[in-house]
Length: 453
Image (cartoon, rainbow, N blue to C red; front, side):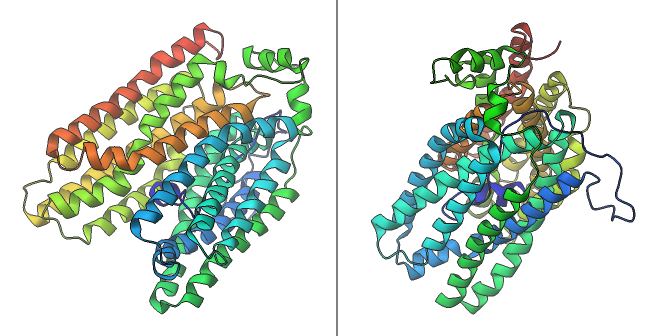
């Protein structure tokens, strides 16, 4: 799901991402007798098993983390909030250098290192005995996790053919949501037991999942050699030329940070990512504070979002292989998200039952916009990148998404909630504008020769 997937980017965090080179084509033929639920590509199936293992652990610790930190570590809500904010900032700052490291030393070894570090840091929460140590550990875990997310996305570019990357990520996102749901369900047992031992077990199980995932990534076959070798190879396109040109000087400048169209796409994608704060923070606050809908509607919104994302995320990637089509998908997503905001705003002042229905309709629209925007921005983050610099590009793109996740709750809670329909309309206009602006950004990239005409 989207929501849990983004929510887990706090102190107890999720997985990571990797760089691109020429990947060996993978089979499109289904495995004989395989379930229709299994992906036909063997590489995607391997990645799906890794993702499922990691996200079950993340869902488990996600369900108990806040209670463990506040009740058993004795942190106040304010101190925990500060630690989460500091950790989020560290995650933003770590993405760019992690991506560059993947291009230089290879996505797989960098990813294995960062995932292992995340697992060890997660286990460290069980030993923390003071607030300064907790903040430092939270920053370390967040930096390793978010840096790993950038490297993992680059790894997808390296192990999957170009025409299957976005569809593969969509399938893995579905698996992510399933894993988080399973892990959260198991975590409910620890919540029911409500003991320090139960919470420690959940956190250590998550830490163990990271270490197991690191082993599985190490065993993953990566075609085309190391990321360092790929980055050194001659490549077509302006980004590859930029990497080559700086190689002789020993210190290569980051091509993504000098790529205007890509930076604009990253900024617009970050604005679209505000929808996650809208769903996780805005909608619950709106339901409880500004509508008469039953509080159980909050749980209903998460169920609706999760089910629709699982059902339609893969389908949403069809037909967006070209950057122009991906930009159109983002434009449609922005308009649908704007409609979602307006529908949510209409729940204020309506009878309880009707308010609940209106909110659920609004969240259903948000889920449709979400799957389209995710598919579109994934495609653009790969299509506008230099084929031999995916680590650098995914690092910058991931930094933008991480920044949106960090500031999104504050933006939504202060600028939307309490301002009624006008607040929701303003957020909707912002989302629609970001989606529609993707088209001009891609046309700019085409004029510069970054993407095919």
